[in-house]
Structure formats: structure tokens, C-alpha cells
Length: 125
Length: 125
Length: 125
Length: 125
Image (cartoon, rainbow over all chains, first blue to last red; front, side, top):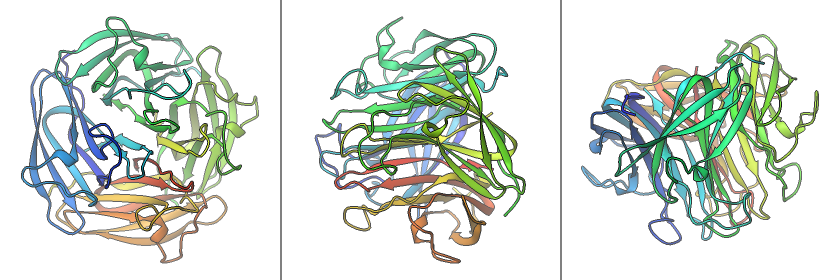
């Protein structure tokens, strides 16, 4: 179960954390999520850079995914080097020293009593 | 119709079986599903390993997909070697001795009277 | 605008036409859809084979996509060599003599007043 | 943060701007969106060609994505060389002089009080 699989660069162009949200937290909070699987035997210290329409990229954000573990990171929870503004279009590039696999998921609860989901595998660079 | 097509390793980082569910079973049960197509002439005895945020991987789960057949497996129905806990983030790696193709689908019925779907092709390792 | 782009084999493992449907037809009919783009200068006579959990594959279904055209085919509209049963899991393999690109889309209207969508690029074999 | 990543040709076969829409604009307008990330150090002057079921392709539409920037373009906002008709199936091919990454997203608000989302990474040609 410890063979590395995946790629070292992953890209998601279509980020946009839905805002506002309706429903109980944290289950129905609106979010964009980056889901990382590190199947290998070495911990992965990922760096994440965020790209915007009208400003220079911000980063690196640091995400640690231990060996043989997953991590599901809500983009809205990232605060260092700077909090991610909700309802602002962005894209991102993740870089890993070892192969990992990255999936993108959005949960949209802007309308009361409705949940919408969308997602895709990220693009391996 | 019997030429093999696909890859031998497939990865889904973003698993999370929605819980609870509303509506009649089994149509509106919340689920994560792995959809496998084996277009080749040989049966495929797949192994599935589940990865978690805070525990060692669990597996192998065994999934048989006969030659020239599909199989749609609900992750919540897997019980051997251990039942998959609902509402717990996971990722998974499928390995097949012959080429197959794997698609991931989620059905979310946590809100009464609402169904949300999302999915993606799995990542071919 | 006429350079061919894409692949000659495309796979969708996770087919399942939602049933029943609610809302006006044809806009809110439940469907699985195969969307084909043929950017090249030659017409593409595609063949489609459907795979099932418990029966031999059925096909070929024939789909013509003219040069420099798209075609969005609802799987539920396929009738030759045999009608596709609703609410039955299936997978499919499309083969084209020239490069094309194939995207899969599902519209689910099983619940009154709700529409759910999901989709993914098909897997290029 | 300035290494180029991606491909120069991207394809989306399954376009169809949902119509009509319900809810406040612009948040709940129905749309198809092309999300482009240009991680490199050179501006990217993209061309977009639209393909139809029953007419010759239309284009090029021109989309500029500056170096180290993203751009999320609603297909329904494209007007030159000709406005995109809502509720008409289409596909598209984007071409870029430098590597970029492209993601497709649809927001469907045809039913009052409901939002449905779907999307996928575009296909790198």
C-alpha cells in the first residue's frame, strides 16, 4: 500500500468559494475543497499558490500530507500567508516533492434548503 | 467488443459518504460509488485500499468485475475487511491485473427533498 | 478550425439513466448524455457499445458526427440495435475512425422541483 | 510562481447555456463558464472557436489572460464575432500560444429556488 502514485504538480483554474452559506456548520458551510491522497511512504510537504484575476499570486500556503494518508483541505480555511476572500474568483497550483493525487470539490449552499455539488480531478501538470 | 482499454491503477482522493440520507432506499440513499468497466476478455479481480486522515490504510477490499462487464460498487456497502464509516473523509486506490476504467460518483441526500450529484473520472496511476 | 483533436476511443463506466423524471419534456427529462466534438475535416461514424452488470455487451449503436460539428446524444434515445432500459446500470465504449472528444453529462429530475447535474470528461482509451 | 504549466489546446464538447434563469443577477444567472489559469510569465492571447450541431464553427473569439493570472469567462457574455445563443448545444476549442489550464463549469438555475452545478476539467488536446 505504499507505492507512490500520481504527479508532482496539480492545477485547479476554477476556484470560487460560494458565499453566503445556509445551514448548520460545518456540514453545510459553502466550500471549495482540495482533496489530496499521498499513497507513498514519505510525508509530502505541499506548497499551494493562489492566482487571481487582478492581483499577483499569493503563496506559498503550506499543506502537509503524511505518508499513506489523505487530507481534505477547505480553501476557505487557509489563512497563512493571507486569508482567502470568499466570493472571489481564483485558481491554484499545488506542488509536491513526491507524487500525490488531487481532486477538487465545491459545496454550494447559497440558497436555503438546497445543496449543490460539483468537482473534478485536478489537472496534473 | 473485447479489447482491453484503460489502466491498472486508479485513484480517488476525495471520498466522503454523505450522512444522513433522506428518501426511499436504495434509490435515494446517500452514497459514494466506484463504477468500473472491464471491456477486456479476462475477469478482473480488483483490490481496493482505503486511505484516511488519521489512520493506516485499510485493505485490500476485493471487487470482481467479470470480462465484458461493468460493476457499480457503493463504498458504503463494503464490509470486508472492515465496514466503511459514514461521514468520514477517505481516499482510495484501486488496482487491477488487467486494464479497466474507473469513474467516481456521489449522491448526497442529506437535505430532505433535495438530491445533489457530483463525480469525476478517477485518476489513472 | 479543422485540425482534428482528441482520441479514437472513449470510455464512460458510470452510466445510469435516472428514472422516473419530473417536469416538462424535453428540458427536464432525466438523461445521460454523450457530447461529441469532431473538430476535424472528416465526418466521424462512431460506434457505441453498451456494457452491463449481468449480460453481454450490446452494440454497435451508430452515431454520426459530421466534420466540424458537435452532437449531444441522449443515451435514453438510443433504440437500435435495442432500446436502453432506464434505471439500469451500464457503461459504454465509443470508437471513432478519427480523433474526437467526448464528455458525459447526467440530468437527474427524479425529485419534483429539483434538478441535479453531474458529468465528467470521458476517459480517452 | 511563474513556470508555465498546462497545454496549448483545450476542448469542451458539452456546452449548453441553461435558459431561462431564476434568482438575482449576476450570482444566480445561468451560465457556462471557461476558467483559465495562466501560471507562466507571458500573457496568453487565447482564441476560442464554437462548434454547433447544424452550422459551421464560429470564431475566433479572443480571450486575453495576463501572465500569472486567471480569468473566468461566461460563455453567455461572448458577443464578438457573434453573440452566443442561449439554450443551444455547442462545443468549443480553445487555443493558446503558451501553456494554460482550462476548467469548465455550468450553473443551472432554470428551476426557481434551485441551483445545480456541474463541471469538469477540459480535455487537453
